[in-house]
Image 1: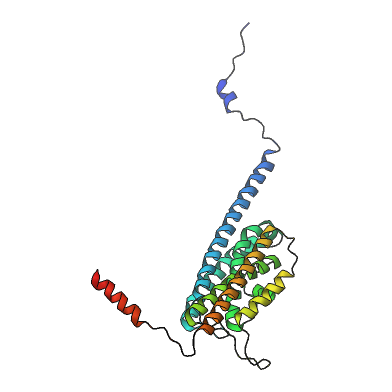
Image 2: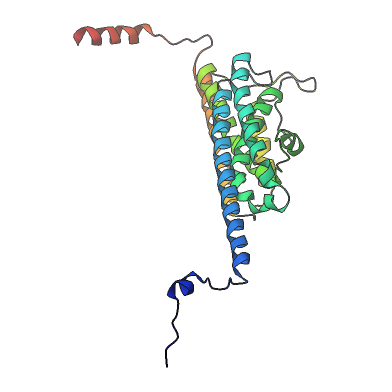
Length: 263
């Protein structure tokens, strides 16, 4: 009895039946890949926004007048960086709509806080008041939401920039930055008065949101204390010096000349 001959080539060409779950898992794979790509885009945009915001703050630290318009050279310099930040927000705005905003809120949070710090610093220099949440939200294009947490944390960081601005003014001009004259008071508010008011308001907040808030409050207090100590030192040194006192540089110049000649 002759055996039945099998065609091995035909058997090799036969494909197993497709699993009914294969298409479902392929959809999961595509969704995970898209989520990862969206997350990376938002992280990169947030880092770029943070870097540009820091550059804006560095430029604003060159301002020397409080409660007055920004000088044209500095205004032109920061304007281009603001335009770049707005482009970055617009580019990721479609990825931060609806429920996706809360999915990727942690990724964009750092950039939002640094941006709030930059725009609030400029707003204070020009108007000597804090920017409101509504005003800050209006400066973020593309419909990207600014959470209250990011707004408040950005204002916490603002106190550090106000401290640097005040210390620089004391070191270069020997005076504390003073606002415009007010009709209600005989003299305008100085920056230390504003810092103390901010400290009082922040200390009344509920800090149970997390340890990072406690840390920012401590840093904020240290910033205000640094300005207070600088003002105390300025007042004490001013009282110790007679009226009309100017430093005598002739002796130091002679010593420097002798040192050069001896060398």
